[in-house]
Image 1: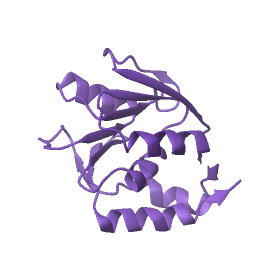
Image 2: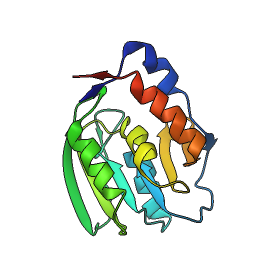
Image 3: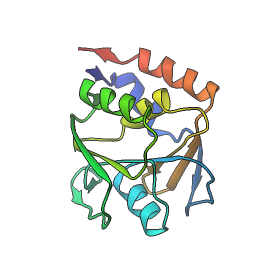
Length: 158
């Protein structure tokens, strides 16, 4: 398990890319991280390759996603952590040629965007919510992967 060090919290609260008020047109594979982003994508007829959510927003407000996923994988991931179970699931899902998969998180999903960027192929789009601002859209590239790798090295392994 990886634990978020206190000194990284502020850095990770800032968006890693451009923030959009509405979903932009995207041509390519998409991974959504977060309930509102996933719900918004699906309501706009965008079916992500992978959707990662916990059915809550702002830690405790329930969210209903009206969609039937092809497959739902459940993982535990405590707040402020990245569990080995979540890492292995995302790593596996990055290698399969399938879409409309849900990773339902018991705990907190926010930090899992880092693992998506680490393992999903270059060219994949990662969408996540920036509270009170909008949707962050990232296109995975080599530079972003290197930046995320440096951040992950700062996490505490337990």
